[in-house]
Image (tube, rainbow, N blue to C red; front, side, top):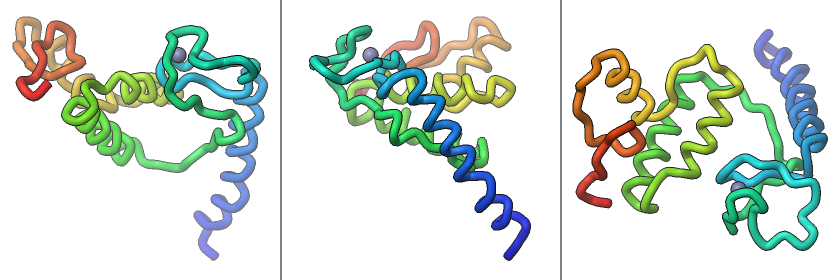
Length: 142
Ligand SMILES: [Zn+2]
């Protein structure tokens, strides 16, 4: 067994259990749209904060995963594009990405919009039509 396999067997369950317990302390789960935790599902028909009726994320399903930041960037960019192209927007993707970025604020952007925003910030006056970028015009397919 390699060192990585030994480390993975020892650490991942502990990290996942830590994440699960931390989530449970905050509530039974949270709205994936706005990230607000709720203490109890009883009587709720939508998110008490944003009104979303989307399926919430239960604290019992909180996990820790090992992934390379570049892999995560690729997944988020694909999800972002799919959201804009097929779902009328990527609001939920941006909400999830916001929670991911908060876990590693030292890492770079995870979406194309954030990549482009960084360029716009560094080069004022740059024009773009990328959804999610400040001042961006909607794409023709939306
Ligand atoms: Zn919400």
